Length: 322
Image 1: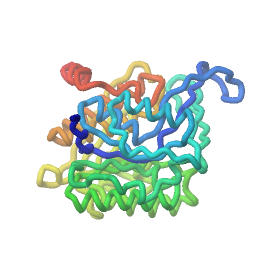
Image 2: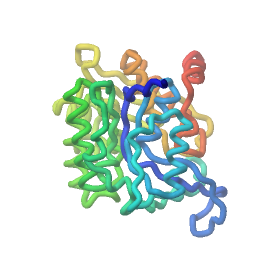
Image 3: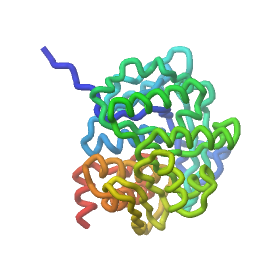
C-alpha cells in the first residue's frame, strides 16, 4: 500500500498562464510564429524553490482546456505538488503574448486573462490546505488584483499561515492595469505587506507604494507596519536589506551581479525572490540572501523565458563557488 504524499511545506498561489513568445523581434501585430512557455510570478517562484529541493505546493485554478492541461503537466514536471490546483470547467485559462525582447529592453506583453479561471479564486480554494505542515507561504500582489474573491483568498492564506507559525514573504509585483485605481493598489498592497515577515519590493515599486524615496525610508515604512525584513531590488545596482532577522536592526547593501548579455528582464524579480527566500529558509544571513538573490536574478535575465534560467541546487552551488 503506497503512503500518501506529505502535504507541501511551502505554498505559493495565484495565476499561471500559457505564454506565447514571438520567435523574432518586431511588433506582435506582424509576428506569425510563436513558441509556448509557462508564465506567472508565483509559479516561477514555486518552480525555482522546487528546483532547489524544497517541497512546494501551488494553489490555483486553471480552465478545463488544453492550456490548463499544459500548465498542470509543466508544473508536475517541475515536481510541484499539484493537489491544490483546481480545474474550472466554467472559465478559461489565461493567456499572454510577448514580444521578443531586444537589447535588454522590456518586451511588450499583451494579456488575455479577464474572466479567467484564476480570477475566480476564492477562500473556498484554501479548504484543503494543511496549515499545520506549512513552514512558509509566498504571496504576490498580482493575485489580489485579479478579483475581490482572490484578494480575500490572499488575506485568508496570509492570516492562517501567520496563525500557524509559518514565515511569509510578499512581493508586491505591481500590475497597475489590473487595479481599479492607483490608490486602491497602494492601500491594498500596503495592508497585505503588513501581514508578511519579508517584504520584497523593487525600488520604483517601493517609491510608488510608500511615497518614500530612499531604500532606507521605504524599508522603515514596512518595518513600522510589522515586517521583520525588507529586501529591496535595485536592478543592476544590486539589492538592499534592512531588518531585524539577526536580532538587531541592521542594513546591508550588496552590489549587483555583472551580466554581459541581458536577453530578457522579465522574471528577474522572481529569480531574485527565489534566491532570497531559499537562502533565508536555508538559515543563511541577510548578506548571503542578497548575494544569492542577485546571483539567481542575474541568471534569469540571460534567457528568453520567465523561469528557464532558474538553477538546480547543484547548479547554484557551482555558481556560488565562482
